[in-house]
Length: 68
Image 1 (tube, rainbow, N blue to C red):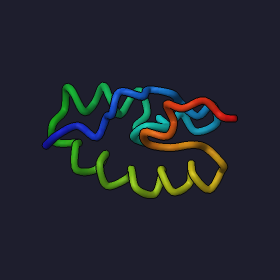
Image 2: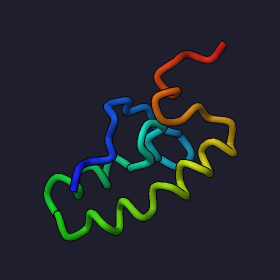
Image 3: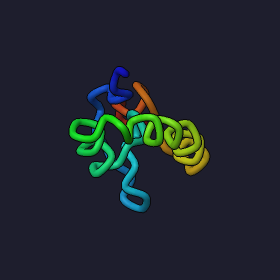
Image 4: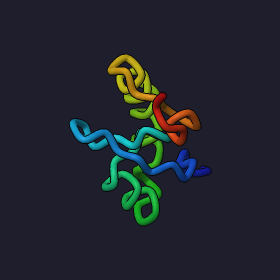
């Protein structure tokens, strides 16, 4: 299973979720070391990304751009 990480790695201070992929720093460590946890991590990401966008964050590849 390919990693959802897109090498943005900017984190929301409140939730700890990456604006690029939705994973936390802890999720990223688990992704590398505990393959059995990958489906659970991946299933949480879409809702996190929706919540980040609803909170006004740029997400995914747009998170790399600076706000105007």
